[in-house]
Structures are given as structure tokens and as C-alpha cells.
Amino acid sequence: MRDIVDDLLRVWHSGRIGGLATVVRTVGSGRLPVGTAMLVDANGAVYGSGLGGSVETAMHEAAVTAARTGQRAMHRLPVPPGEPGMEAGGMIDVFAEPFSRRDFPEFPTVASEIAAHRRVTVFTVVWNPDPDVIGQHLITGQRHNTELVALPESDVFISSFAPPPRLIIFGANSYAAALTVQARLLGYRVTICDSREEFATPEAFPGAEVVVDWPHRYLNTLSAAGEIDSTTGIVVLAHDPKFEIPLLTVALRLPELGYLGAAGSYSAHARRLDDLRAGGFDEATLSRLHSPAGLDVGARTAAETAVAIAAELLAARSGRSGRQQSASAEVIHAEQAFGARATVGL
Image (cartoon, rainbow, N blue to C red; front, side, top):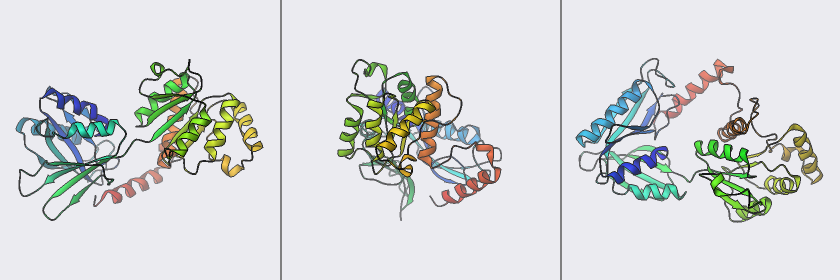
């Protein structure tokens, strides 16, 4: 639901009624995550999902019906052969509900907490013997898994929104602007840091926080405040050694970090490693640094480089190697079988 929060808020403020369909349970459904949602507004416009195939059509029909009738209901959708991205024979449970000010009066609180990068969890009753209880929502700030929970007299879907992972880009330039776009598409909260005030202007990096400070000093400040963790990504785009080496020295000493990359040519990479070795870093520590940053996809422009770095960032986040997906049919089939087993019992 996070990806359609702005659309939901717009429907809420319109005073009209939309329909919201949410995947609350999957069995053998391949890559479809629990929590995937589709909104149909009062004009019939569709937001979210993007699954394609008959499952998406069925979700759309469920959302439209909920908006038209005001009824809340669970729908069990079988996955037929040939469904894109999903395994035939699987099953998806979808909860459809009307969405409006009256139906979800607490929603602006949810939206504001997500916008402020604070944890928020929504409990929704998706089944109960009393029809008036179905669709009730409870909002908390507690941490939970996103899952369907069966209680003695109710089924409750828990949708938890953690603060987004953070990407800190050091160096305000066209590459940073392009990477900001890619990282935000991946759900990152992006910060640009540069000591040059004339380059670090918020207007040049829409959607990102812009900080004017010396890179190593700013990173030290964040670390001391406990704002760096195992989900945090750092990309260094400042090629000047007087900025880069002090910054990488701080970054390589951090106990937790999701990704550390430094862009540049192979000659810059060699110089960078020599400088860091001279500073006392061993090969095991230097292996944490992705340099030059980005998967080898032949990137030349700022936009292409941003795609390459974003792909490597995503691979690091998911623990993948970044290999070609068609490289091994046996591995893919094994992953699909594991995914099917993992979704049973959600």
C-alpha cells in the first residue's frame, strides 16, 4: 500500500468513495508479495498492483464491487496456468473494502506517519461473524510482520510500514540527481550531502533531503545519532580525494552498513584502494567497498550509471549476486519451489 499512499489520500480528501483490494495471503503464488494493493477511485482510475493477467482483473472487479456496494469481503482467487510471474495451482486471498473518509477515518494518520518516516502498523479485521466488525481498522506504532493472523473469532490482516531504508549520496552532481530518481523508485529515503553550497541546492534534487556539510563530518554525525544501520546505503560520487578518502575512512569503520559504493574510473578505483591501504585498511575490510560502484552493464551517461548502481544496490539488499536471471533454469526452479513453500501458512 505504501506505493499508493498519495493516491489513497487524494481519494480520502475528495469525499468520494473508492475501492481498495489488498492481497492478504498467498500460497504458491511466486513473486506476488502479501500487502500488494489496488485502488480504484470514484472515476474508475486504477492505482497500484500492476500484476497483469486474470488475477489483476479479479482484484479490479473486487475493488469496483466494494466501492459500488459498500460491502467488505474476502475473495479467494485461484492462479490459472500461464499467469505472469505466478505459479499455476496457487491461490491468493484478497480483501476488498470501500475506501473513503467514512470507511477509513484514521487514514490521514497513517499517511502522515509514513511521510514522516515513522513506523506505523494497520490492523484490519477481514473476517468476523459480525459483519459490522469486518473492515474496522486499528493504528499503532508497534513493530509487526505484515501477515494474516487467525484469531479465535476474527481474521486480522496486519500491514506494517517500517521507515524506508536510507540512501546517502555524497557529491551533488548530475549523477546524484539521476541516482536520486532510481533510489526513490526502490523505496529509499535519499539524502544528498556536499560541502559546496552552490552545488547542493534542493531544487536540483527533487524528492531528496539536501545537506551542506563536509561528507566525513556529516557521516560521523549520523553515526553518533544512531541513524546508520544495516539497511543504509552510501554512494560516494565526490571524486576528489580530499573529500572521498576521509569519508570512506569513516564509512569502512562503521559496524553496520547495507551498501557502500564509490563511483569512478578504474584508475580512480586503483588510486582509491592505494590510499585506503595506506590508511591501514586490510583486504577483508576493503572488500566491503563496491568500487567502481554499479553492475557492469556498459553504462556511460548519468542515467545509465544510476541504473547500474541502483541494480547493484538492490542486489546487495536482497543478498543476490546480480547474475543474469536466465543463467540457470535449475536455480530458478529451486527458488520458485522455495518461494511456494515459504508462503504456505502466512
